[in-house]
Amino acid sequence: MPLLKRELLKTMEPSLTAETIVTTLPDPSERITRAFQTIAETRMRDLPFLNKALSVEAVGFFVWNHMWLGVLIAPWTMNLIATPYDPRHWTHHKKGGTTPFSFPFGNYDFTLAHEPLMGAGLYGAYLMCSLFSPASQFVDHEAAHQTAREVLKTLFVVDPDHVDEFAPLNPPSLDERLKEPLSKRDFLRGRFLKKTTP
Image (cartoon, rainbow, N blue to C red):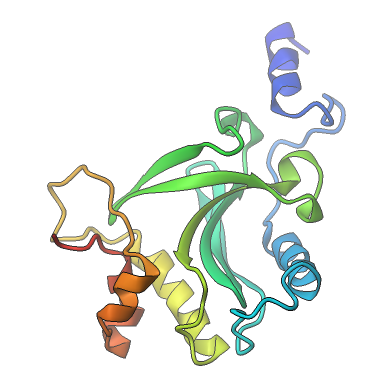
């Protein structure tokens, strides 16, 4: 193996050797669901803001920009999640730091985290962008699931209100969302993703 490639593998994850590293990582849906179900039953079990109508689910993961991208639903949150697909493109992410990603709908910051329950090394690494925290808006899991699907579709639709803007689109805070009631149609079309107007 060429020296440069060997050194690159070392910088990505010390526990992965040239013999064990894979070209791409598999769909993370199962290990995300398993890990966060365990978290729901342990660390988060007795917290007062849990939405008991929600289950843990990894929704709609697909390969985008050398990563797996999808939505995590849990009784306490809904997050956009990105995990490694091609390990060679994960080396520039640093734990605790933010990474901006540009979608047709706008630009969003993701924070790098690591959950050992998902697996060792890169298998436990993920980037997160919070959509709802807590997840008290949802009356049942089906509403959360449909919203997650709409989020993934909305991200790849050009927003006509911001088509000439490069500034990041910051999702409104929970308090801002609650002060401005949304119709079911607006809610599912992802209006909550848009930047608030001053």
